[in-house]
Amino acid sequence: MKQVQAVIFDWAGTIVDFGSFAPTQIFVDAFRRSYDFDITLEEARGPMGLGKIEHIRTLGATQEIAQRWQDQFGCSFTEEDAQKIYQTFLPLQIERVKLFADPIEGALDTVNGLKAEGIKIGSCSGYPRPVMEALIPAAAEKGYKPDAVVASDDLAAGSRPGPWMALQNVIELAITDVATCIKVDDATSGIAEGLNAGMWTVGLSVSGNEFGATEAEYKAMTEAEVAERREPAEARMKAAGAHYVIASVADLPAVVKEINIRLANGERP
View 1 (cartoon, rainbow, N blue to C red):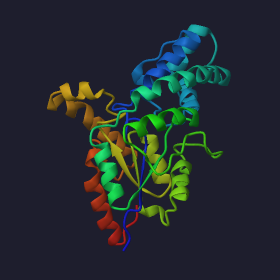
View 2: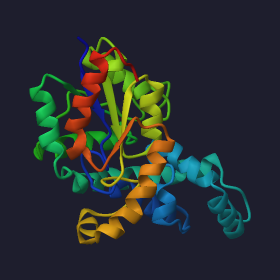
View 3: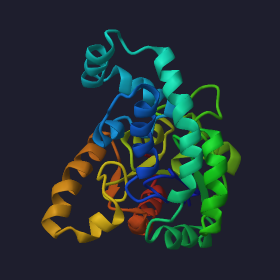
View 4: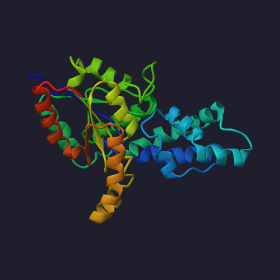
């Protein structure tokens, strides 16, 4: 009888860094430091989940940002501009990512429960390898140690929304069937990654990028305020094709049980 063999988690906004603030603020800072050019936190969130150089390219190509860039500098945003911003972004991200390694509430309980059931824990990220090398030990000190880690620049094929990072986890974890894997992510590009890899996908509507609040802000909200932000986040995840949408990974065990039943009944993603 087929059962879930692996869960492949994103990092920021999924397991650590409630609200996915480590990368978001640094995109804002990198544009400002490189060119004295302002983007908003909301704009910075737009392409979240992509590899970080691709994220910067996508921001520069966004209609509103591209127009402001043209107005400010009298020319179009170029690949040279993207590379300069990335070179500013990278050391800032390496320096600060360790400050955002705290596990999201319920994440460690979920991960440890999955491990106790014999389920392997994979992971991949929009962060490049130098950033992951700073985050991995910081998260380990807090109790999170996945069985595999794939960074956005590890593979020649690329990163999200392609399937390659998720499939590299399949290889490293020695999984025999992609249909027994679950991809969990707080960004729509991560849902696309899981779908492209032939996996079950679970989107997160509160703990990460789509909701976009700190844990303290979230806990201070009324039920109505939470619903006002959660519902459009859920809609974006469902529109991206997520099989399930939950608030955070704390709610994942029930989904795993349901997918086990569906696998046992012969269903595939």
